[in-house]
Length: 455
Image (cartoon, rainbow, N blue to C red; front, side):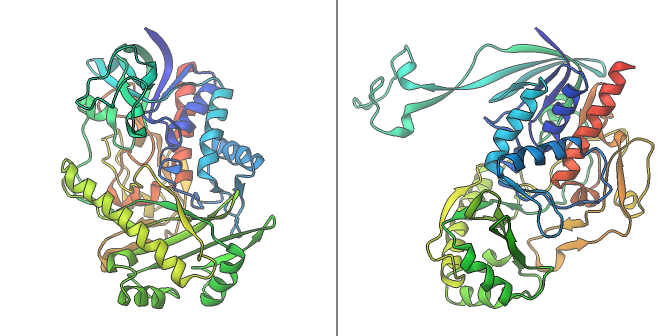
């Protein structure tokens, strides 16, 4: 058995911030992540850049260290609007490793929780098991197969050269405090926690990708001339390299709208491909563009895996059409190609556990203040929809705060949560889900627990 002051389940945005700050503030910390890398949607979902938030944010120590470290590796820029959150998602994996290791966080990758022991309203221990990649030639047992060509160490297809195996040895972990920062609230589900009952409301997901081989010096003057609206299209040179952004959606008229209409008429694109289109350059990748699309609707029945899988497959088909569209209609994209498709879906909404306080859209719009806020922001209420008339991007008139109580479980004394899956309603979550806010949540919660531990 191992004992920790804090165990963080989920190494995404909020989880990394919480683990880093708790270790830096003296707590013995374990971070558990199911994937082989940290960063969650930032890295596995290719969600870049981070959106700009309020100028007077709080709990930004980790975010600033993250940006500083990225910049030292030529993997970050400050954009024309002052947004420091333009980063390279692949280098971010390396940076997160380095930051957390440097402050003493124990990191367990490829790891899942297999059992939770609890007593009354307290979690007593977690049992974890790691997934391992085992090379076939390292196995000491023969592989049974009906094909005589498939023998130990001499497999004829690369697909079969790696097996995924669960380590039968489990490790028991005790902790004073536990944070569930998984997007799907894996621990809270396991524990039978209560959830907020508005999960019929959803936003469409995205399967983001990167195109490389783009001549940005050629594309930049084209897009700036085509679109004079500098709220929609921006760009120029930063540190000698092109940085830009542009967008087009089907719910209103944009400068790019005629190109998309022409592509649909010519059969290059399908109508659903035009629902949402947004691109950004990537620091340290001078011929690449990050696509925040295609967008697809989440199935109403999450357990319908076949339907969900078909949506992902259709999204990859859409990606192929989108790159053909860019090659035909965008100067500079003639030799472009798909260099990366996100292994993880970009999810905008998640189930939300019941906390000691349920944060609402009225709290957000009214700028309600709290005694123990974990974040301060003014990011708008950003609701995507597959229906043209239901998309919403509503600016807020006041900076808003989120209280620590929205991160405290109503069901267990030593259970907390951070990230987009917190105790709030659907509409406020649409504003709270951005990367800087999730960083602040994790950091603010860790500081609170460090203070609690030392009191």
